[in-house]
Image 1 (tube, rainbow, N blue to C red):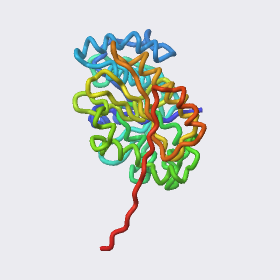
Image 2 (cartoon, rainbow, N blue to C red):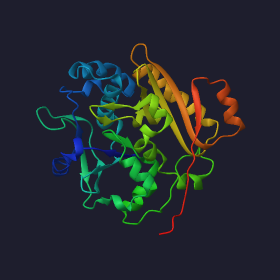
Image 3 (cartoon, rainbow, N blue to C red):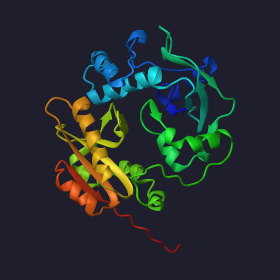
Image 4 (cartoon, rainbow, N blue to C red):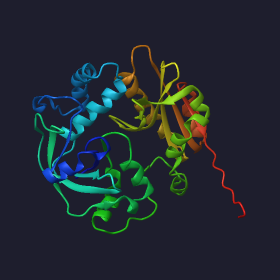
Amino acid sequence: MKSYYRVMLGAKSVYVDDCVKGNFIGVSFSILQDLTQDLTDNWRDFNKQYIPIWLSNHPGKSKVAAGLSCGAIWTVSKGIKKGDIVLSPNGSGSYYVGEVLGDYEYHPNEILPHRRTVKWNDETIDRANMTDALKNSTGSIGTVSNITSYAKEIESLIGDNKAPSIISNDPTIEDPSVFALEKHLEDFLVANWKQTDLGKSYDLYEEDGEMIGKQYPCDTGFIDLLAISKNRKELLVIELKKGRASDSVIGQIQRYMGYVLEELAEKGQTVRGIIIALDDDLRIKRALVVAPSISFYRYQVSFKLFRA
């Protein structure tokens, strides 16, 4: 079964035209050596080997940034399989669509030297025709993101059929209609972070002025928001549920927290978790009693009409 990925081809898609003309996708991240013998089946083994190399090439950078970069290198070079579909933005509101045809190749002294051969479609996908959920996923931070959960919508767009206006892909949300109403919660929190109670104590994770703490990839999924305390001593994992949260979200956020603690936390840093949802129930309350490192927040939306 094929998978679908959004792949950025250089910062702000600077290399997209070269990649389309040359029939490839690729990455660099200042790792200038052939990876053929090191592309393990498990990306965590690859990261373990290459994060120190990346950090030595980028003094002063964090493990969070290193993990994001090395994970992207492995995904483009190994994780994406032949036959998978990639979408790459052209910087003008559309996406090139291509099928990956080849295995990893190293092209020294060229742009994006870690490459895969791609057959690009003649037609592009217009971002304006995407649902908001797919727009958010294809617009997530980072070089590569897995958007396979939107396969039906993507295939519909490739076939030039307009996708439905509302799609929910989260089985842990008990009321999809509420999800549709609140699909902009993540973007709203990011835009208004400093005005929230959490923003008084935490900053959304940034590197060089770029916010990389939104939809941060880990080995069990994507962390909705990753923040760090003002004193840099605590990492905060935030899981957003746009409707009522079920108790399964406890296990989900604990997996994310475990990853952050083992793979990203610097010496002396601790990890906490926060679930934000419209409502809770007795099951999640019981589960939280024995999970003291996880807190629950409700959000509230106000809707008003003003006479013009």
